[in-house]
Amino acid sequence: MDGKRGSRGVRPAIVFIGFMGAGKSTALAAAREAGLETTEIDLVMEAELGMPIAAAFERHGEEGFRAREAEVVGALLEGVDGGAIALGGGSILSERIRAALGRHVVVWLQVDAKEAWRRIAHSDRPLATGAEDVARLLALREPLYEELADAVVPAGDRSIAGRALPSILALRDLPVGAKMLWAASASGEYPIYVRSGLLDALRGEEDRGGGAGRPLWPLEGRRFCVSDRAVAPLYAGYLGPLAATIEVEPGEGAKTMAEAERVLRELAVAGMTREDHVVALGGGVVGDLAGFCAHLYQRGVPVVQVPTTLVAQVDSAYGGKTGVDLPEGKNYAGAYQLPAAVISDTTALATLPAAELAAGFVEALKTGLLAGGALWERVRAIEALDPGQLDDVVFACARYKCEVVAADEHDDSLRAALNLGHTVGHAIEAASGYTRYRHGEAIGIGLLAALRLSEAPELRTEVEGFLVRHDLPVRFDGDSISVDAILDALQRDKKRTAAGVGFVLLSAPGEPRVGQLVDPARVRSAVEELIG
Image (cartoon, rainbow, N blue to C red; front, side, top):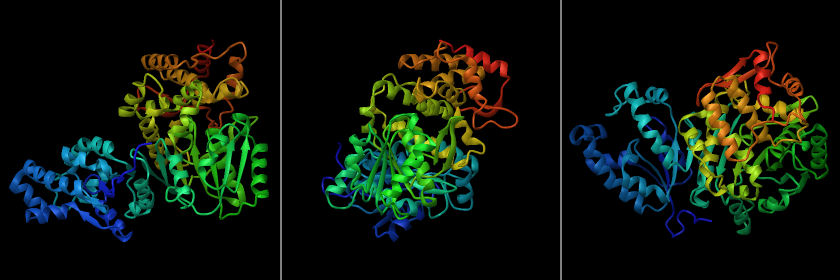
């Protein structure tokens, strides 16, 4: 494991970065209330130059101001011991400042161009005299903010950074490279941590007598773990003292109402109360089942998601969808239950079979297709799936999904885009009795059907090539699964409306179209094309 920040005896600072109007001063005030010594760089620069920032720009020009800022702020960051600092919006343009941020916990406070201009329109900002200036500057700086950030806090009300602060502070005691995303949507907020070695960090806290996972662990009370029989022996011991561990069989077969009842009854027999919480340790099946049981138990207890598979770490652990399957269809019984936290230790991916890792990466592929831009370029460029090199992809996928959930938590519109490839993929799973294909394998085949229906032949060819390169199926076994069985299952898709089954189509990366009704003859043709 890499060393912790400040391991040489000098403590890291919490450094807030972000565009004008992002709320850095407000975040600094929250840090001050939490007992941290605080420094606001704009005030430091005004004292250093003996004039307001706007006057300094007018007298010295931007180049002159930035040169002096690099000297003053660079030296401060290189020598500071702890505390909290708010940088100016453009401070990160300096190479010296960017280098000096390496030993600190860097927190990116996000804001979009429209909201930034609304907040600063009547202030004296020398580089932002109109909405067009704001949009242009933000587009130039955002890649730097993203590259530097250890923690990402989305735009929100004035107190959002204060609510995220305890989770930000936990980063000081985690390995260098650990990242935190503050997920926020209508029903609540929670931290997401991503990094190899997080489970070791949890056990380290317990070994020091601080209680399992503190301050990383977000909750007091006893922990009741739900896991599967393959994962629990590997990782349950990292989670500190567990009041009980309830194991299920690996695989989709565990996602049933009968198994949910068994888990609920075992929680009751073990004495779980509403002051306690569930820990979901495992892949997507365990996350869905444990979250569903947490939602139902005594009308709701918190759940902490500790995903150990790639499909869970890039997708299913976030956003609060939980559920079980019925004989009539996948995820037919479910509830929304936002986690209290998600702790994604990518070290766990090293214990996955290669086929499981590849299947899980299909969800990252899907996310890249939906997001387009930099995430798509990052995903499509991956030649070999090295678990030790997936931290950035996992974090980027989590960010994208949480942005979608924030805009549409309860799946009324935009969130439906996350089902790209899942309409046919789920139907293949159901038609094969959830035994023939892994979830990711079925979704990969479903992606090919969706891109065929999208009339995106070049993109379909590229995705097929990606699947082949990673030894994933691009056809289903027509001898064991009939086209009619798949189409029958498709008609039971849980998102079907009176008008029919709405598909997610995608003509180009980053341009999904949801709720698209497609001629049944075209759907049949697209499925028949996939017979192996």
